[in-house]
Image 1 (tube, rainbow, N blue to C red):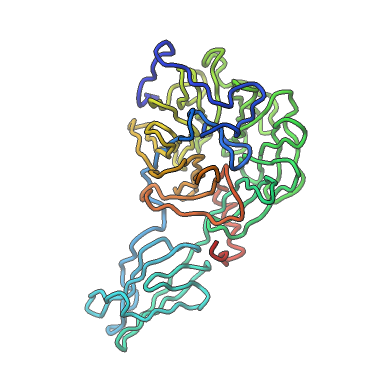
Image 2: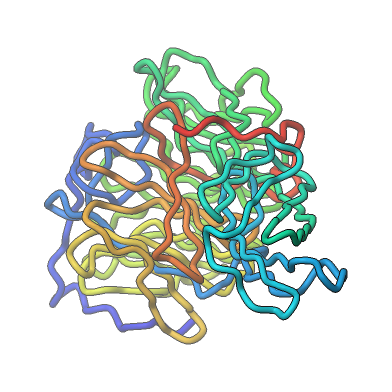
Amino acid sequence: MTPHRPAPSPSTRPVRVPGWATHGTRPGTGPGWGTRATRPGTGPGWAPTSRRLAWAAALLAAAGVAACDSPVDATPDALEIRYEGRAERGLSLVLQARDPAGEPLAPGTVAWRVDPADAGTWRGDTLRLARAGTIEVVAEHAGRTGARSIDVAVPPTILFDMTVDGNTDLYRAALDGGELERLTTHAAADADPTVAGDVVVFVSERDGNDEAYALPLAGGAATRLTATAAAERHPALSPDGGRLAFVRGWGLTRVYVAAPDASGAVRPDPAHGHDGTLEVAPAWSPDGRTLAFVSTAAGGPDLYAWSGGTATLLEAGAAGDFEPAWSPDGRHVAFASNRTGDVELYLLDPGAGTVRRLTEREGSDGHPAWLPDGRIVYVAYSGSTPELRWLDPADPAATHRVPLPGPAANPIALPAAESGRAAANPTAPPDA
C-alpha cells in the first residue's frame, strides 16, 4: 500500500516515547492520548502536553439523513409536509408545511401535532423524536390540514466502559442513551471492550495485572483468556471472531495475533521495528484480512498495516497518529492525531492518499469507532472528563452527545444484527 507521506528515517526523526511507556506505568495515566485508556477519565499521551490527537473524517454519508422532499398527501387542498433530518429516536426533525401551490408556509404559522402524542416533543417546527416506530405528523394552517407517516428508527447499539460510583464496568446502550445495560459488576476495573458475534473480550485487573477476559454479550460469567506476567491490553477481535489481536508487555509493548481464546499468540511481523519500537492499538479491517496498528518503528507514532508478511506504512504525520479504525466498507480509516496541535479526529482514504479533518474544537477527541451505518462514535474530553459523542462524516461539524450517567470511554459498535436487539424498548431516555 502506498503511504500518504514517506516517514522520516529514524536518524532524522527524534524518538517520541509516550509518557506511559515506562516499566510499571499503566496506560491511561499520562497526559493526552496514544492508547485506549483502561480507566475512563484518564488518557495516556503520545503528546508531551495536554493537547491530544486529531482524527480524520470519513467522506461517507450516513444512511437515513435526507431532506425528504416528495409530497405525501395527494388531496388537492391538503398541505404538503416535508422534513429534514435523520428519522431516528433521540434526534430531531425540522418540519415544513407547504400550501397546495407548493409554497412554503412561514415558520410559526403552522399548528403541528404528532400521533401518538408521546412520540415526540415540539419546539416550533422542530420535533424531537422520543420513540421508534411509525408516527404520523399533522399540520394545520388556515383551515387546511396535511399529514404524513414517518418511520422512526431505533438508534444503533454501542458497547463501552463507564465509571459509576467509582467503579469501571462494561455497559451497552443505544446511541441516544436508551436501553442502558450493565454487563460486568466486578469490583476491579473492566474496560476496553471488543466484540464479534455474541462474544465480548475486554481487559480487567481482577486477577492482578491487566489480562484479557471473554464474556457472552447476553451476560454471564467471564472467562480468563490470558495469564502471563506481562500485561495484555487493547484487544481487537476480527469481525468474524476468528482471531484476536492485542498488545502485550510493559513499557515498549508489541502487537500479537492469536486464536479467539488468546492461544497461540505470535507477532504478526516479527521483523518489524527495532528494540525500542512501541506498538499499540490494533484494529482489523471489515474483511479481517488487514490489521492496522500504531508503531514508532520510524521514530514517532505512525499508522501501519499488516496483511501477512511485512507491515507497511499506512499514514505518517509530522506529529503523531493514533487509534486507527476502519470504516464498514474498508475504504477509509478514522484516526486521532495531534498534527495541528490539538488532538482531533481525521479521516484517511488510503487509496487516494488523502486525509480530511473531522473535528475542530478546544479539547481532545479520540478513540473513534464506526457504526454500521457509517457514523462515528468517539470520546470527547472536556478537561479531564470523557464523554461519548457521535458525528456523521458527511456533516462532521454537527456533533451529538450520548447521554450517560457517568464518564464513558472506549466505545465500539455492536454488529448490525446485535444492535437491532435494542428495538425491544422503543422509548428514549429523558433529556440528560
